[in-house]
Length: 322
Image (cartoon, rainbow, N blue to C red; front, top):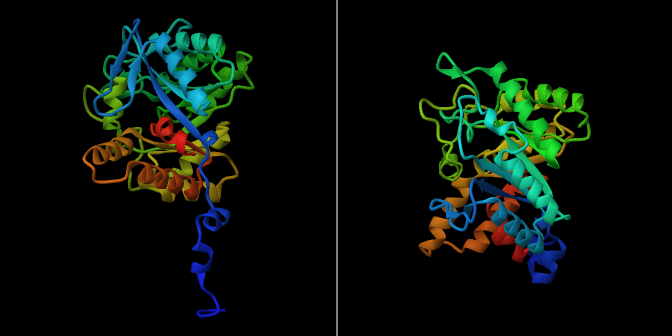
């Protein structure tokens, strides 16, 4: 049946009706807030390229987590900036490392929170790459050992989920094996399965102090032009034991999120990354856009594309409107 019998505007006549027929809804439980744990005490360093975000010492991370939980954001993703870095990131493999200390402190004070621990080496290495360097490039298999040690330590101190973001081949399987061997067979793995070598990460590298000191990450992060390859990466991670797969970044890769959801029967996460966040903030500060409407539209588009979980720096701003 066509016009004039069919008029799609009939279902747009009032706000109540529009809400009744809304197909996609973003709720607070969909959102994960990334936080940056900084060594020291009484630290609250503003991240200039990411307005409203801070590098926080452990006691301030606890305070921030309490605030987020009160707002309805009950899941956080932790990144660490340590006192000292080393060549292969072993400083992150000990139970008294910076993120481990934060997890212990948060769990002591807050019961109703879910802590996801990012696992990578870029914040912990002197060179800023995601693993051990051999002959000028990241050595895949040596890096797996460090990553798995980090995962086991984080599980031991109380992390609720681990999230390897390094893009080394085989790291999910290696990590699953080592977690199981240590008795943490119930520890879920959320893998950054399709993580692209993106220009949208710039502000994050300021926040995590993790910019590579030479070269780039194109030998391990994905070519932004490739979608079929992403399906291969995701399939391999699922075969190795990933419980949740992630696409990162989100906005320029909505098609990859949709393909992932259509292809695999598994929960899908998407990371609305720092550059995407900061562009919205910069335009809003200049009065060029309506920040709240734009943010809701962006998050809705990510959810509509197929993401079950959205990691976003907008979580704290948008929670009050959900």
